[in-house]
Length: 327
Image (cartoon, rainbow, N blue to C red; front, side, top):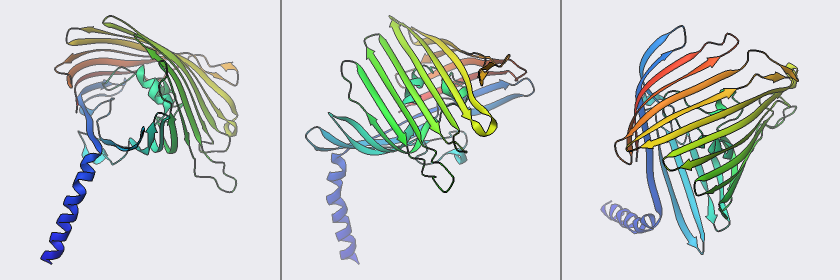
């Protein structure tokens, strides 16, 4: 038994240098705070995990020779205030190859559309400014996916992602999904566009589409952002051939010493269903905030955010005091 144990320890010791040779990184983010909310009926106080989700992840590469590397990433959500809400590999799970040709991965994770939309969502508290989320036009992450990211050439980069529905059966069409983006970034300017399509969602021929165009511009300590999204849903079984809405986002962030001041809003215009305008279906979502950077990795912030909805939809208000830490 002692000889068997010794042999196992020697084998493990021999494997250790190989593991150490890989580039493996542990990383994460924790974001928790006090939230006061009011939806017109109920006022509530709570300590909560906040909009920029807490997470822990592992990522790494292995040099395969030449310019080619194998890579992996596993990232999971952490509910800091309630461990029962956490899970493993709930956010990202990838394995693939990367090199001069770009990056090719298999697994699950955020879509190119979501990656671009996240650039315009600058708030961390209880209520962000996410263009795709309000009308639930897109899924932020795809399962069962293949993704390709191009190398950056002259400031231009792109990404394509396809999700295999894997639910095709007699009389049931596969609920496959596609997402793509193209971005130019150089100096103070970033401009990007993205498209997302999800088909046969719960019923044959039901489809959601979204198109996004936006950019940011930095002037000294001021960063300006603006984006436009057109989204439409199709549900023939419910008699809806086109349920469309345009939405416009604008935001600004100003760095003043260790403080970043932020303001932004999304204006969702009235819907059009089968070509007819639906009056009083518009909305405004807004947010104001200030973050004090205690260090390069830790910040404390205050935010006030809310919705102003038409058509009798209840308005909401949120006040947040939060602490965010990156590692």
